[in-house]
Image 1 (spheres, one colour):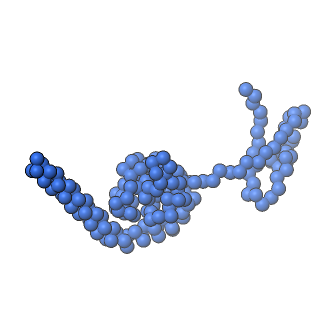
Image 2 (spheres, helix red, strand yellow):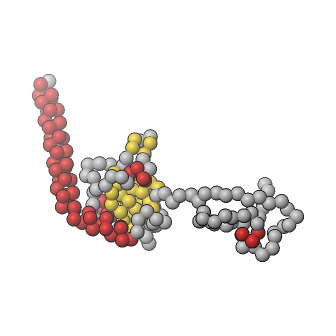
Image 3 (tube, helix red, strand yellow):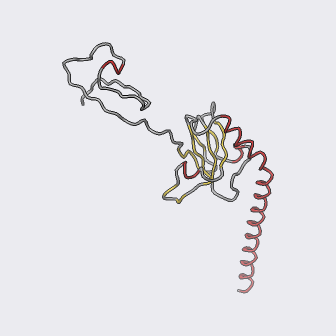
Length: 175
């Protein structure tokens, strides 16, 4: 395996960078007898990644977004697709992990009755602290509506199960 010396120059893209030692902060040409080459690489985008399904442990030291799970089991949606729907957010700093449950998002279930997932924005670039607070304040005004919606869904599920049990009992009586 060959090893070689490398130097890096980060550019904001508004200036030209030449392949010369002064552009890399070097006062002398390193290994003047050696041929050199330069290449440019785009800096990877800082995109939040899926860190847990509902109920799972999200390992994250940044912002955690709790939202509806979008897509299919073979092809789950990326962060930018999933965030188009309702979501809430919390900061997991200083803990390194957070459970992906409504309890860790001030009791907010942004879409009752839907499967959820969490995304981690480790570098906290998607949202400012002020916007995180604004999202939390928004949901604080909606929490009563969400609780009523969850109660209705729970009642409907109980009625559905009760009806299913009734139908099963009727089948047993007929036989």
